[in-house]
Image: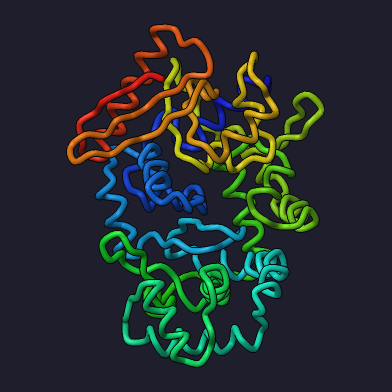
Length: 361
């Protein structure tokens, strides 16, 4: 396996090169978890990995509770499917709480306080209620706990998610709501630790391989020891290849999707799994740019890629009937690649059901 093949295989395994999935639930299930603090961007990230996607279709799946948004794996937002939520929270919450413990103490939040706030949230939300953050903040205050500033209250809600108390509800306009997990998702899988480790690991390397152990540790939030144990549990369900002194793990050859011919452009959102899922992002870095600096930026900016490599960035500007895509190339793009970018901008506009306008910066 040569370095260029890494990005091509990743594009295929992540359903970016030739999407075949037909529902947002299939996409999120295949990826296990999709980082989602950039909510509009994360929906577009799902849309690029399926056929006939629209923003409305994905929003409906979220409002229906088929896809949930909460803090899991790392101290940040992720989309997960309903059937995966409990075992993922049970597996990763101890590690996330350990990482967050310093911030809990700084906000003067201890276990006794969390027990009180969880009871208040249960009492407030029970009966199928779905309430906004502001509404729950007032409920906590009425219950005798000072919610404090947005950071302190954010930790209260974050911890309640990790304790399996709340999850995302239906949006009210542009406002997010919370619901009780036991009411929103009355039934979902619960698996033992080793089985959960094996499933998380297999699904990560199946959807994102080739990837290294360090990549998996970065993405999953697990310790290196647990990550190695997970690979050992899987045995021959994964295979490894050495590339330039690094060990990459990926599923057996029969499960690796074929690499389609031709080049393709993608307007990836901020925090897209094509970048955020890896500690080492060099496979997507073209020759001739600041590899180290750009590799750090692209995971958090909105990168423009062609043939799996970063060639620029982009931003959207929404109007009533038009989305303007502002494209900033880092490299000189040939006419053929510019055509690919224009086509992708039109696809994005269709996803939003808006007309397309493009500005080259």
